[in-house]
Amino acid sequence: MLQWVAAIATGVVPGALLCVLWFDAAGDDRELLLARMLFWTMPFVLVHALVALSWRWRASRFAVRAALPAAGVAVALVALVFWLVPPTMRVQFDETSLVGASQEMQRLDVAVMTTGAVPYDGAVMPIESTVDKRPPLFAFLVHLVHRVVGYRVENAFVVNAALLAIALAVAFAAFRRSGLVVACAAPVCLLAVPLTVVVATSAGFELMASVWLLVAVLAARAFVRQPDDARCAGLCGAAMLLAQSRYESLPAAVLLGLLVLWRVWGRYRPSFGVKTLLALAVPLVLPLVFLMWNAQNAKFYPEAGGAPLVSFSHLREHLLPFLAACFAPRLGGAWPAALGLLALLVLVVRLIRREAGRDDLLFAAPVLAVTAVTLLWFFSDPDEPAALRLYLPICWACALAVPLGLAWSGPRARVALVAGLALLAGLRLTDLAAGGAFPELGRAAMVRRVGELAARQPGDVATTLWVGMPAQYLIVQGRAALTPQGFVRHVGDLQQLRQRGDLRALYFVQTALDAAMAPALGDVAELLRRYPNELVAQSDGDLPVRIYRMR
Image (cartoon, rainbow, N blue to C red; front, side, top):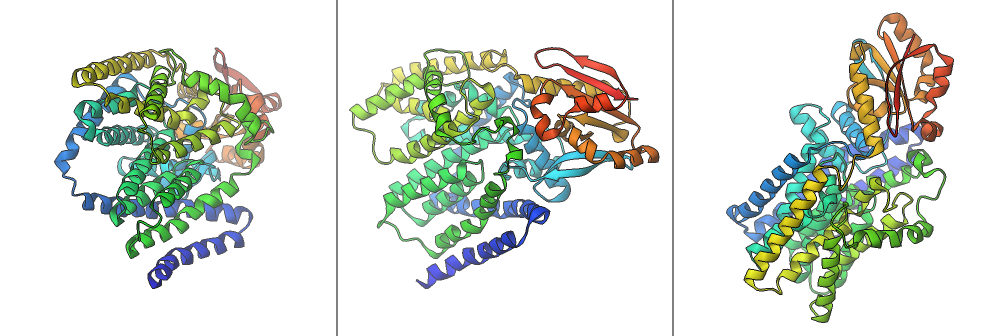
């Protein structure tokens, strides 16, 4: 009992302190407090996870050379993927926000993203920022790479490449006891889902959430089968990383924990070290709860257009299209498709053979829960390419169900089946590389053109200001930029900057999305009517872009 009291105190005391600070603050002070909390809890989150996972590693007595096959397969496949499909920002504007948060983490040691910056004294000076609605773990990992090699947008791709390698190695290791052929099939099946490569070669955080979900459910299975302190510690570390990944990841981690508790009740008594790990999870997760509280503000969801963010009407609208897309008998597109049908077949056979058991719930329940939350969300239309990344967990569940069926075949049949899966993965990868499975999205193409047009305009980056809806994208590219609303708020300051010579050129950026985003960001068309200007560049297409220089 004294051990429990001491362990709980290690979590309750800092947790209570965080709560006192949170409820005592208000307005801008509360947002600054949240920004600091989110940043400074991240090192402790990583230390917590590393201590827990290293405990599991040491107890397993797993030789490093035994991990070499998994690592070799993973590195080779990642190199192939990034050679065939060059990384790029694929879904705007999530990726811009994540990179922007990592940019400010490196500069100020706070979890904010800059939304407005001006040229000042020969440099770009941020003047407006906000706490992002997204959990900060991915941005923090990217910021760590910034610390080593300097700030670059491409560092987000480095993090996702490493995460993809972890996913492929873990998938290989999870099936290693079924033989080398089946083990090789697991990472191949993951890559046979084009959506895996789409998120891996982007700057988003969906891959990270699925990787830690995979690691957590495997750790849960190991603990349930043989409860001991080391396996519980491994589960604690994996669940901590999972909880910090995406919005729905915290509830998924809680659900997984409850399932594990149900399965080991009466079979395991934790040591003081494990109790301490569990207690410390409370203060480490509290900032995420505060973040969810803060993210209820409608300003974070201008694309919702006033519609409810979570609703059963979204589920009714999206469920059948999701099932049709995920299990369609086709080879094209980013969904599992043919692999989804194979996964259903494997599930039916496992039920008939009575091989499915309660441990399967450790895999199925969190994945189905995350998918259900996605379907309830307003932005989850399976026919909307930008929303597909949200369905990665269920796509991986389909992919990893297929190797289970290989155990029912003979050695020669296994080799033939794995060869067929490799051929399928190759065909789908080449289709993706050619732009067939996931063509460039309109918004991504639009902001890319904005960046290209901006780079062609004369003037020094340090003395030029850009005004328009894509201000944040231009900021992460190293330019000074303001939204139209930001321009109006700071027009007096900008006049002083022009008089000082800090601001020598000003450009307005007009896009096809301006009208939709005007309620949240302001309308650049109004500024064009108010200030004399001239058209200096334009790019036509589905979402045209025009650049005007202020006279």
